Length: 282
Image 1: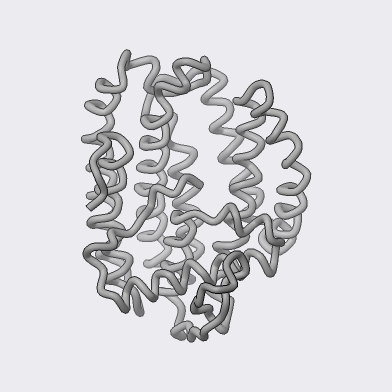
Image 2: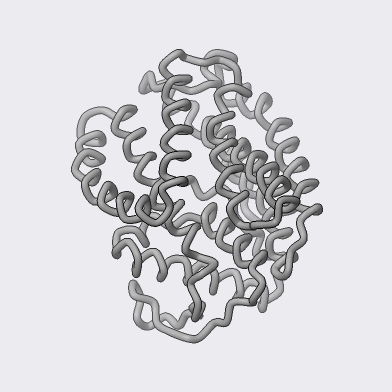
């Protein structure tokens, strides 16, 4: 994913920040254990949020223990003793990254494309392992990515239609965090809004680069400058954040509500302002 679902550190208590870091490190370690060292390098804030949400809905609270970071042995980290809450997010991350590599191969040229082609077998191997554990996720993500590719091939100019596959993919993944039917419906809505936010922000950030390279970008058909893109996308980003917050308030969480709320109420807005308007993160 793209790393746009971030926390807002100034408003987190120290113990909350340490919990967030523990979940991040636990997911990183779990991905390395299940899918190899390279998979750990693909970890993003987006899937950390999914892991945090998954842990927040588990019946039992994850217990953490101290350890050392593989990449920096001098760094002390906290890791979850039980990886149950991280199994699905880890597999979803690996499958999504593989499909993103395929998308990059189609969109890139020259040495950049060659780099993705060289790395494809590595990510393909990870994806196969994840798909064995969660074939339904592999099938769903592949279908959503294919729909996305068709829309781009047809040069879709409707922002709503262009954002729909990514939004639906995140909605599906979020719904897997709970077996409760009421929660599943709310999670689907929450994921949809966040997925739409991610797609629109990424397209807005890539506007100038895509315009130069000739790659597809939904805003190319309705905007001429980055300033116009910002003016167009900002109200939509706020709407997605507000709708996500409404869904979030309906969830029956067992823990981590303050941390998750920090991401939704403060982190998302701070992130897009930083990315689009070059405002300094507070």
